[in-house]
Length: 293
Length: 288
Image 1: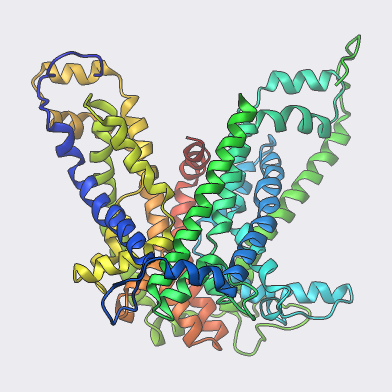
Image 2 (image 1 turned 45 degrees about the vertical axis):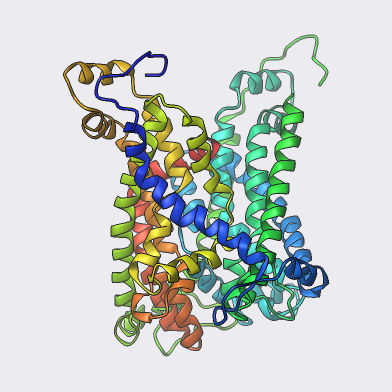
C-alpha cells in the first residue's frame, strides 16, 4: 500500500474520505462541536432559561474567589495522593501473585477482575452493606475494640472511603496491565539474579521494577487522570458531602451545571479541570521521556 | 549488586516445603479473592435472606436460612427493573453493532490507504481520549437539545458510537493484514469496499469481538450521561434505574440488593463466557 506510486486499482482520491465519513460526522457532532461550546460557555453566562450572554473573564474571576473551588481542588489532589499508592503499587503485588504458575490461577485473575466490569452504581450498593454502621467492617473494627463509624457520613472518613472503593473497583484493571508488563520481563535476567543469590525482594527491586518502567508510566497517568476526574463514585456514595468533604472538581462541575443550572461557571471549572489533566499528562510524559533518554 | 566470584547451583527445595509453600499461596489467593468478591457475596446474601432474618447485625450472619427468591420477585414486579433491563438491552443492541461498523470504516483507510493527511486524521480521532467526559456533559446536553433529541433513546446512543480505543485497535489489526492477500483480491477486480468488507473485516474478527465485549460492558454500566439527558423513567438503563431507586426506595435494602444482583447477571455471564479474551485484551490494549 504506501509506497505505491500512482492510483491503485479501485481507489479514488475520495475513497478514504468516503470510508471515514460516518466517523468524521460523529466526531464533529459529539466531540468537536461540544468542545467548542464548552469553551464558549466558559466565557459566558448561561442558565438554560435565558440566552447565552458573553461575560468575558467574569467566570474565571469568580472562580479565583470561590472558596468551594479550592476545597474541590484540594479534595481532588488528596484523592490523587491517596489513590496513587493503591493503584500504582498495590496492583503490582496482585499481578505478581496471579503471575505464579499455579493450577487454576486464571480463575483467580478472573475473580480479581470482576469489580472492573461491574457498574459503579452496583459497586456502591454492594459496599453500602459492607460499610454500613451494622456492616462487616464495623464488626471487624469492633473485634479490636474500635467503636462503630459511619464511614460515609463522617467528615474525616468519607473521602478515604470513596478513594478506597474507587481503587478497589479499578485494582483488577491495573493488575492486568502489570501482568502484561511482568510477562515481558526477561526471564534470563531473573534467573541470573537468582543464581547471583538475590532473594525475591532484591529481584523485585533490581530486576522487575526497572524493566517495568514503561508500564509504570502508563499506570501513573491512568491513575492520576482517573483520580482527578473522580465523579461517579462521589455521586453515588456521598454527593460531595458531608460538609463538602468529598467535593471533587468533577462533582463540583456536575452540581454547578445540573443542580444550580450555572452552566457557564460550570464550564469554566471544567476548563480548569481540563487544563490540570493536560498538565499532569504532559508532565508525566516529560518525566518518563527524560528517564528513557 | 556485587557479583559473586563463583556460582552456587540453586539449592533444591525439599518436596514437603514446596507443598507447604503452595498451600500458603493458595490461602493468600483465596483471602485476596474474598476481598474482591466479598462485597458481592454480602449483596447476594442480603438479596436472598428470608424476612425473618436481619440483613445487618453483629456478628454478621451471611448465610440465608433458607435462601428465598421473594425479593427478586418483589424487585421484578413492584419496581420496573424489567423495563430497565429491556432498555439496556436495546441500548447495547443498537450501540455496539453501529460502533463496530463505524470504527472499522474509520480505521480501515487509516491503516491501508495511502493519502495526504492520514497522520493528522489519526491524531484527530485519538484526541477523543483527552477530552474529559465531565467537561463534555454540559455541551453535549446542549447539542442534544439543539438537535431536539433530549430524552430519547438516540441521545443515549449517539455519543457512544465513536471511541479512540476502537479506532486505535482496529487500525493496528488492519495494518497487520499481509499485502499479498489484499493484492490478490485487487488483481481479481474487487473494489476497495469489497476488499474491506469481504476480506479485511473477517480477518480482524477477533479484535472486533474484543471491542464488542468492551462496548457491551461500557454501555451496560453507563450512568452519568443517561442521568443528564434522560428525564423519563421509562427510558432509564439499568444502572441509572438502580441509582434512582436507591434514592427513592432507599429503605428497602432487600429489594435494592435483589435489583442490583439482577443488573449484574448479564455482565457477569458475558464475562465468564469470554473471560480469557477480555483478560488477554485488557493488558495489551492499554499497553498499545
